Length: 260
Image (cartoon, rainbow, N blue to C red; front, side, top):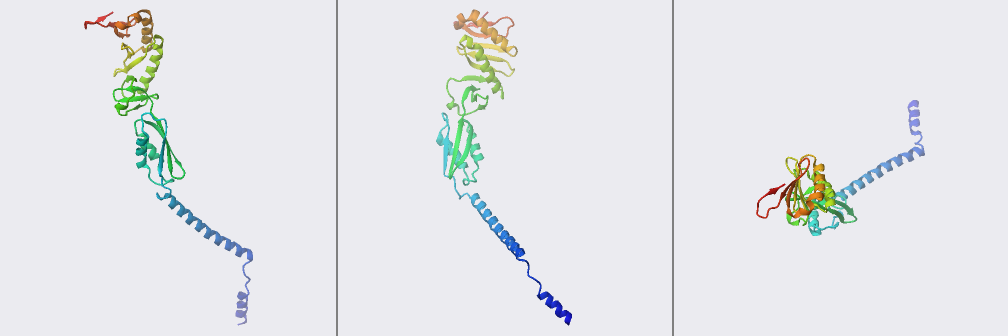
């Protein structure tokens, strides 16, 4: 019995935990509770930001130097794609809807606090016609707006599909070579056999063929200056595919043909 009493007394007299340990325990508990509260708050906040009703987009502003595009048309194109609020609207989808328009070369879309999308549009700038139903820009990229919107006075380029950039580059080079004559290329064609021909701004057609195109064009420029310039009004077309000269077809008032 004496031993049992000693044990009970020993248990009853066990010292309490040190104050520092109790403090750490309370701090840990408080930290856990605070973390849970913060996580809950973050989750609630994320849910609110994902809610389309939170800060809805109310205004779409269109900027850019527009000549062939109408701002109202652009707004009508962008607005149906604007879904979600300020933080959730899919700006890539808005941009994609705009660049799908033929006259739009590029577009940027950014958010403006608290309820606006600012859209900056870069319009296509055509430098020539491509075939009968398309245009080509300075980068050699083909686009196909309504033919009724085509600008007047553009050079006509023709060629196989995918060759617009090469034909445009040749057009620039040939124009530079013809500058000494005060002439410009009104039409340039690369046919299916990869043969080149052009039409000058006065209607004279020049056939250059598939090979030695630079040399043939240079020969045409030289012989034009030496022998043909004074007879330009009589010339119908010139075949430059000969080694040492040119074949000229003369206009015939009676409908016949002449060649020298």
